Amino acid sequence: MEELINKICQHIPIGHVISLHMENGATWVSLVNANDDDITLPDSTDKTIIEQLNDALCVVNKWV
Image (tube, rainbow, N blue to C red; front, side, top):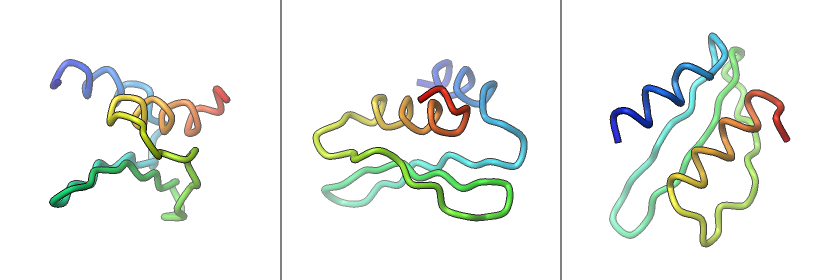
């Protein structure tokens, strides 16, 4: 997993933050831009953490 995270981090623009949140029974990813504004991500229902991380990376780089 560390290798995957390092690859993701290489593509996050400076000042942006992708966060992984975990609690009992739930995990989700969030994205904040350089102005500390939350960026809306695609619906994460039934998506794996890897899919959610991929969505965040695509949104932050405007690949979608």
